[in-house]
Image (tube, rainbow, N blue to C red; front, side, top):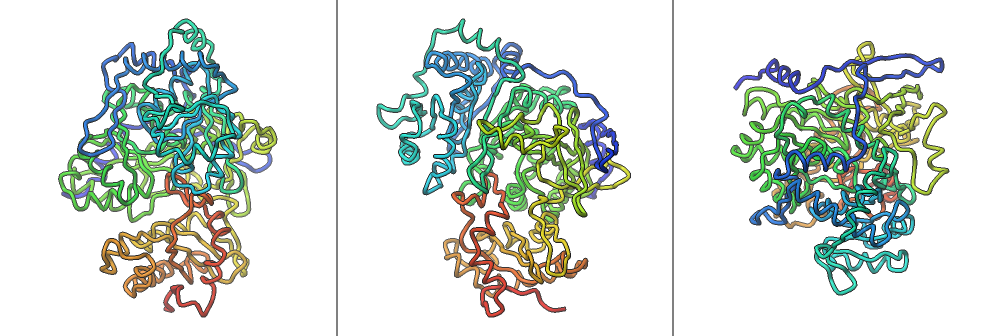
Amino acid sequence: MTMSVEAGDARARHLFAQPRITSRQSADGSIVLASAEPLKDYARCAGDWLEQAAARVPDRIFMAERARADAPWRQLTYGDALSQVRTVAGWLLDNGLDATRPVAILSENSVDHAVLMLAAMHVGIPVASISPAYSLISKSCEKLKDMIALLDPGIIFVSNGSAFQPALAAINGLHRAPVLASVPAGPKQQPFSTLSSNSHDAVERAFRAVTPDTIAKLLFTSGSTGSPKAVINTQRMMTSNQAARAQVWPFLEETDDLVILDWLPWSHTFGANHNFNCVLRNQGTLYIDSGKPVPGLFELSLANLRDVSPTIYFNVPLGFEMLVQALAQDTTLRQRFFEQTRLALYAGAALPQNIWKALEAMSVETVGYVMPLVSAWGSTETAPMATDCHFQAPRSGNIGVPVPGTELKLVPAGDKLEVRVRGPNVTPGYWKSPEQTKNAFDDDGFYMIGDAVAFASPNEPEKGLFFDGRVSEDFKLLSGTWVSVGRLRIDGVAALAPIAQDIVVTGHDRKDIGFLVFPNLAACRTIGQFAADAPADEVLKSPAIRDRMAQGLAALKGRGGGSSTFARYALLLSEPPSVDQGEITDKGYINQRAVLARRAEALTRLYDDSSLERIECPQQ
């Protein structure tokens, strides 16, 4: 097939609202951007969404899950979901939980997790879904201990009591909460399936007392510098954000067939507040993907994708990279994916341009047009969407424009524009932390997120913004030249594909830029013709890998642009990023600052002229 850009653009215009933006300049030189479309009315609370769905489509599948590719899907309809939510909500009230004693959920996404989460929110009890990595991967559970001590939860839920037993032992004595488990281990863990209550009137009263300002969730930041912060997420934040989503994606209310297959964890705002709430608000169906984009688990994601055809596909850049590799090898899956999926959205980090181009090319080859591939931007504190690219951008990285109801203040900061956010989707602050709350907002009430943005076209704000890195991550070389870490990381990952899984940019107060590279070991083993279980150290020393890395560094330098746009040196890291040390999140996002703090010895080797490990950019 030949490329039809016009067909792709027409498809995007049919799906999306036309971006219309207002712009004004403040006396201090900052620029305030907002949508020209006022935010429409939004629901009082998430419980109203569930009540409405159960009344309108009681027999529709709300969510389904399975642990293995050959297992049947466990399904839950909207009608049954509301019934179970009311029962569990009554049990929570019977056991003394209230707005001061949150529900702590330590486990991965599941139907039971969803029911408990919705039940608590239904009656005004905050929910704190905590990344299972802090329980199952962390060796010290130190961050989990900090979280539990801060929360003082009224109940703790785990999926499998045996798997979570070490974590439960680690937090013993830090709380006074009973433990619920889908699969309990011993009499001290109550089976989730046995919860019952006759407190129907109390549930109804508590539900009616919920307001838009009621705390719905406490979502933890990654905590890469110190203990994680618990971000207050109100009902208003969630419901206003989904109202804005529906305004920029009007097809959500014009069709009745929303299907999502999603792995993104509910301990993070992308999976919990964007994807889960999008399904619930629009009465769609969510298939919980028990896989994820890591070796050994992505195979389950692919099996689920062969079984379920999503109408919208959400993922992080790492997931799209692995999807591209799979689609290239499976023509049947590729045909189903592009025929059924209306659009794909990436978030959590910028998508490397080589992955963007590969998806575009496959889409054209398969269905004759470019499937809309879009992004959005925000944070845990913005529930999460502050901007949305509701148009087909010509290249990767465009995070779009402010959504209805949200204002952006762009403040000059050196040669960058620091972005700040204000709107009904923005958090009122941090749980039990008034000082951190005070320091998070400027005098005009804008949340200071710490990111920078750049205009796609300075005189045409409706053409969107590009994420321009973290203000605090950028640095100067000894020459005085500023290095834009966010931009260079994206370019570096693309230039070193497929070897580089991710990159940490170095060079603060040094003459040259360097890359600490977390490798894609599967790709490296293929390039070096190693067995699948070959040790990482042996693979990374391969001449084939080092040559490919050198070629990539040369290609990056060959693009031109000066010393701030390429790396002179690179070092491959055989040790994967650490969850305990805050180097990586569940979504695969690498924290530059945490890696640099922990890998000081690797940084020394990177700049050691006698090092045999580092790879140098060839002289041209």
